Length: 147
Image (tube, rainbow, N blue to C red; front, side, top):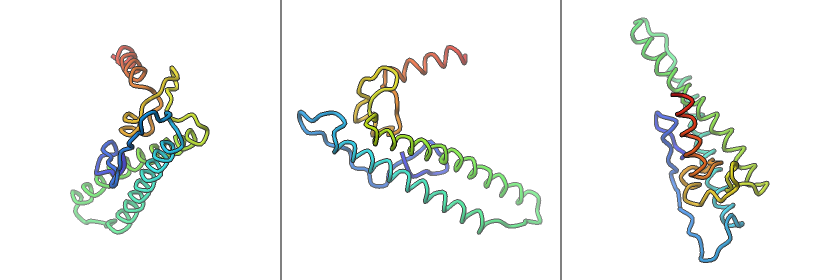
């Protein structure tokens, strides 16, 4: 989840509070939807802050080094940062589409089979659209096709 280091795949929310379901509570009730909406909006905000930091860094650190090795190192660093931000940009789009699912009451249910995805899986991956079983099958098929 949110806050990236140098790798867009390693995210952690700065202030994450797990949802504590009450006994007999209906799945994806208003409290749960609000919990995930807050989680997604926080994640999105943190990603946007990271984008702003990167833009500032690129502007501040841009220098024309006379040494070709220094210049190459700086260009490689900038290239890595821009690739990371591009992945985060795609993730922001996915977060936005997930927020739309919450608004249309389609969030939390598997797009393949329709079963509940589950609170803990959604907390681990708030943008998940498949239950664990369907995702596992999807990955097996991908391995079979891809080699």
